[in-house]
Amino acid sequence: MEPSNAKSGKYVCSECGLTYKEDEWMKKCEAWCKKYKSCNLEIISHAVEN
Picture (cartoon, rainbow, N blue to C red):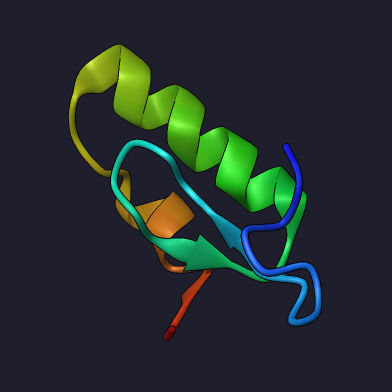
């Protein structure tokens, strides 16, 4: 997936809307959200403020 804002390099989970600096964490967040319909505290600890 492309960064939601290419200039800032931020990645947004399409399921819950949390923002990440790294593509890897955004992908993990999306996968968790889709599978469990919830958030994972370990994953969301890597989220950044918008």
